[in-house]
Structures are given as structure tokens and as C-alpha cells.
Length: 195
Length: 125
Image (cartoon, rainbow over all chains, first blue to last red; front, side, top):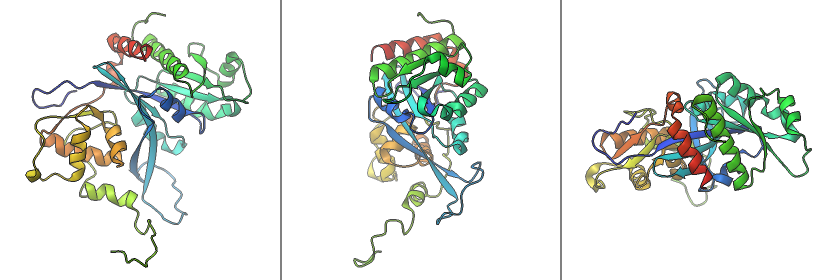
């Protein structure tokens, strides 16, 4: 919905993609690798509404909590701007994910083979929500290498969900992950796009 | 006021929490519009004069939004929480100093044209 009141210059349409995964899986690294600026950080100050059990035993018993999200921007011509949001890692901030996931094109779940279980919650979340997602296995140096089929099995991924290897530090590799996601999302939600 | 011999404890009040609400004069919701994190804003019209009653933060937003910017970007560049930016953008929108566009809804995610544009854009990065 455009809510400008009179004749105004045209604004690009914003699209968002979420980058999820466990702590240290390389979310911000990937956001930074493909974005046109260094990763930016935005904060939402949340009241205790919906936070659930907060730890009030700390020195300052605040009634508010700040959730930080790293994100980046990719300008796509004049009509579209793509935003990549790293999802906050803590499970108690999942209600922030709802806001982020709403209207998103899809999600990249970054998997770290040293801590594969860390991405279970993300897989569960996007499966339940029906958000298109792909799994990108971030190849950390010194991390055990697995065949993609093994990772798929371990994550109990549906065969239709793309899973690929990536190096989140590399622009080309991260871009390939995004392209895989956009194609997958288009397959699910629109007609097929090329190969 | 802090004396020179007092400890320079930055956290005697928590500016991270206090400042956003001072900037908005206690308001937590914008007067109009929802302003999603990726709602886009663009400054329109002639720059307001000094008698427009705008705060420095409003002026900084207008300056930033000479090119289209999202709520999240404005928040990041001004180092204020997104909720604060929503309120300030609402003020500017009310005064017709910015135009804004909400992002696509999930319903619009079936638009093939959008997927093609995104793929083409990514491939040409």
C-alpha cells in the first residue's frame, strides 16, 4: 500500500530475506559479504510484553529488552531493494522473528557442521510457518566435512528443500545461496524460473 | 550536571533506554502508518525552515531520506531504536515531508515479475 497523499516520486519496493542459524554460524558474515554496505545494526526496544520469563536477577531489573538485528542492503535497479536480516539468535526472541518473517521472500538457514543441532529450531520455525527456506552449510576451516545428503538426513529435511555448501565470507558464494533461495521461493509461490 | 571530580560513570542513568523516549516526547506509536522495519521513506518537498518546529532528529531523517531509506536503515544510521524512528517518521509524514511505502505483503509474493527482477539483480552483482 502506498500511503503518500499526493503525487510523489516513486519509491522502490523493499523485499526481505532472513538469514538464520545458530550463534556463530556466520549470519552477519554472510549479510556483510553480499551487502553494498558494511552490516548495519538496528535495535528494537521491547517492553516485557511477550518476552516470557526474563532474568530479573541481574543488577538492573529493566522492564525493557533490546533486541539487536544485523542487516544489509542490496539495491536491485530502481524498483527493488533487498534487505538481508540476520535473525536474533536467542529463542526467547522468536516473537521478533514473526515480525521479520512476515512478508519475507524466504530464509537462508546457515548450518555449522560442528554444531548442526543449533539450526534445528530455525528449520522447525520456518517449516511450521510455511516460509520458503534453503539450508546453506557454511564450510568452516577445520570443521568436519559431511556429504550434503548426510546433513539433509541429520536435519530431517524434506527432499524438496535445497541444501548447498557455501563460504559465507565470499560474496559469490553467498550470492549463489540467495539465488538458490529466490528460485526455490519462486517455485513454491509462483511459476518456475529458468534453471 | 556532573562535576569535574565526579566519576565518569556513563551508566548513572541508562541513556540507551531513556533517550529514545525523550526524542519522541514519550510517544511509543506513530500517529499514522505502521512503518514496518523495511517500509521505505523518501523526503519530499522543500526542506522545512527553522520555524517548522522540528527536532534535530527529524532533520537528520529528512537529510538521510534524500535517497529512499528503510526504517531499519534510518534507525541504524541515527543509532536509535526502530520504534523511535517510526514515531518520528509519523510526524514527518503528517507534515507531508516524507512519502512512504509499505513493503510487499505475503500475498504479493506470487508476483513472477518480482522474482525475475530479484534474480536478475543478484546475478548482475
